[in-house]
Image 1 (tube, one colour):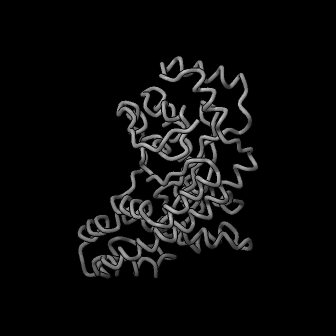
Image 2 (cartoon, rainbow, N blue to C red):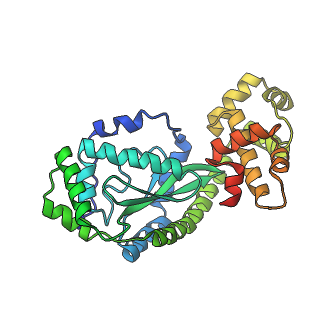
Image 3 (cartoon, one colour):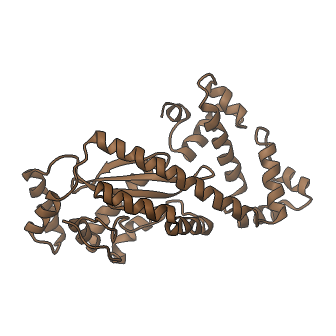
Length: 315
């Protein structure tokens, strides 16, 4: 059973736990890019076609979106709609969403929620950074069983959810069934579209960079030209004939990340390209990307990419 598209927000108390998590928040510039992607004809046409083809909801949400991502979307399940408006049930949904986003930072992933349904998230990247996710889901991995109904009914009773047993069963019975193989195919399909959105997002970013102050443009050029060498803020400031303090403030103001973090992300992106060549050893990749030690490379790569260099190469 589906519900009509409607914009309803869950109780603010339901998101307290998720919001308090120390997640990295996207910058205002990232949020503007996501909003432009959402309004783009490319996304709107794919979203409509995807719903018609699969019978599933699809939503593009920024990285810090702390509400059930598919709430209010076309093809939303009735039971999920009710849960999104209940504080306790909503908190359960948000915990699942948080786990899914942690898993999907680098590539699309699927996860089963406590209600037995599958949710999928695929990342959107800009300059190697994940700024948003394409969300889909509210599907079942197999035909619903009586055991699933009993377990769901027990949870709904605990949450005091205002939905009848008949409505609950109808919602499950009408849910699309996607086996693990079909889920992988779905992730591949959405990933292909996510790459197009990433290209569009990077184009937006490039247009934004053209409006950057000359000082920041020169700083970026210097960093990119010397990425394989040790780069100190003091040396760059001297090269640009400004104070390190002023450069640090201006860099963070316009680039939206710390100076050292920007360099690390660039080096990780360079390392990813080098890892595509199977003949390059991990140690060679580390030093060619500008890292001064293997442990530092491994720690930085996993923090930024979410996986180790070896795991990334296998994926």
